[in-house]
Amino acid sequence: MQRVTFSKKTYNGGGHISAPPSKSYSHRLLFLALIAHQPITIGPLLAANDVENTLQVCKQLGVQIKNSSSKWKLYTPPKELISDELIFNCGNSGTTVRFLIGLSLVISGKTHLTGDFFSRNRPVIPMLEAMKSIGTKYAIEKNGIAIETPTINNSKIKIPGHFSSQFISGLIYGIIGLMSRPEVRMKKKMNFDEFTIETSTPPVSFPYIELTHHIFEEFGVKLQFKRIENECLKVKIPMNQNTRLLRNSYEIPGDFSSIAPILCGHALFGAGEMRIMNLSEPRFQADSEIIDILGDFGVERVVDDCDIIFFPLAKNRGKSRDLSINCIANPDLFPILCVMGSYLPQITTLTNINHIRFKESDRVSEMVRILQGFGVNIEEKENSVVISGKSQIELSSSHIFSDIKDHRVLMALLIFTVGVEFKSFTITIENVEYIEDSYPKFLQVLNYQNAKFDLEVIN
Image (cartoon, rainbow, N blue to C red; front, top):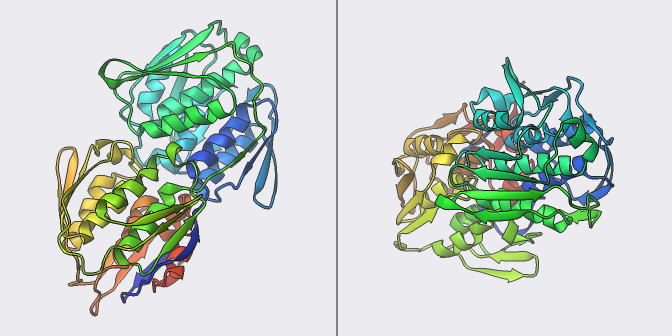
């Protein structure tokens, strides 16, 4: 276990920081290599626990990997993906779990999925239940699930969209995997010219589904997306497409999700300008919206090619205008937006947040509990939180956090901590190693920003 202790307020901010590679792109391109028919070179790959889980899964299913410097060459697996009762440890990566469930459509044999994900009651049963209608069988095991799809007996699946966008993206990967392997389709008795995925409820985090769509379009695979009644989604996948990919390499852009807490910390507590490098392709990253949100808070920035230069908010800021932010597409931004709202003298309302309760933790209840413990005026409502912020937060006692295991909540708490007035008190945060699920260098970046803390490793 790793823990950090803060005892004084020091945070300058500024300088040049390179955004880490996108986690969403890293997952998707690794799984694309799993179902492709030719080698793909990608990079730089995010060196984080969640991506490592996906990397190991792909290796188990036959992808051969060579890496040099920041480039990874992924060699095509066998024509048929055979699990042979393989056990896949997915850790706490929801993307790995749900994409692998979708890919079970193209895998021959029973697969066993295990990992910390299954001990946290994160939604997966609605996806499995929906897949039963097309021939998937599953069983709940002690530390995970066993899943198999021996035959595919339907050309359409209807699945709820309000739990996770990964349900839809995972299914897209599975169906395209079948599209590229006619011999597996014959073995599974799938004789359809087209397959349809339809949501029974409006999809949350829709930009992540758009990212899946974008990556396949970039490689030459055509999907038909259409909004239907009640804002639900219909995806049609023609099964007679050319299976040769149009490109054999892809440059992974920087991750807006991971860099967002650093941007918010600089806006609140930084000094001078901060240049964030490697932030291309914002259109296809849901959390690139942090740029506009910070603008709404009053943060000035300048775009310079693939870099963005940010300036901190004025230190003598008065009451800002009240702000309402819709979080339906951005569950990973919710924790750090709670921190922004806490430190600004205005009313900040975060709406459409119910799906955020089903992430690595119930992020809504977690952030409300944490911030109320510091005296922040934050109120949890049915599908929103309302924060009445103030410019300064003073400690009246020391705090120890020993039960947080959600990387986004931990990063938000660390940013919150660098802004408090400590007096003679301290804040200790344990389990900070969970940040390595998405941003292993986060503490290094905080240190670079002159945040002073003591780091301990406890066996």
